[in-house]
Image (cartoon, rainbow over all chains, first blue to last red; front, top):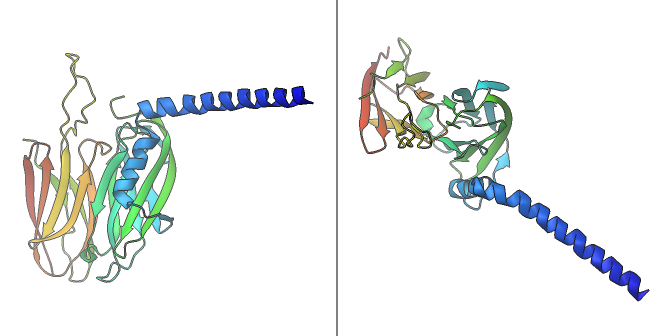
Length: 155
Length: 107
């Protein structure tokens, strides 16, 4: 019986080690490309410790971007845009780009509507992320997947 | 200095109306990781900030990062509170500025 227990321990150790190897294998290339850790740092600078809530944002994107060098987009945030309640800023992030930040747009109550359109670069197929900062200190977010046929960003 | 920016405003606007303002400026938005024909990395050169004022008051601002495409096009909205002139300013890395003014025909 003692031997059985020892065998189980050894198996557990082997399983544990291979799990560690797998997770290390996943983590290292990501770190080298300043992937997830970097987007985490970017999110921290944009929202601090707040947790953005899904909603209020409409993000217009093509489903497939044939040319990643110039991908049109439009962002609209639902808000009355009054002095008491308005959208202060909208940030657009492309987490799988070498550098995730696309642009930040700043509004005032005089904007009338929190709506903006521009064009971005996308290095590869990914989920782009829009974050809205409201005047009351809350944050909203919205993610949308987009397929990229030929990547931009010079890479 | 790059070519003159292109601005598109409605022909006329009424007080209280929310109008769309479309802007486009020719600029490579060099992101700093491309290599030129000589094999050397081309230095980063972005228009990093866009600001729009109307009648002297800021109405819209954008920070542009490496993810913004070359020849940046930006469309935004403004509620017309009275007559005035738009002033659009793009600021390049290093501090050079491109400025364009255009009056709004308020009826």
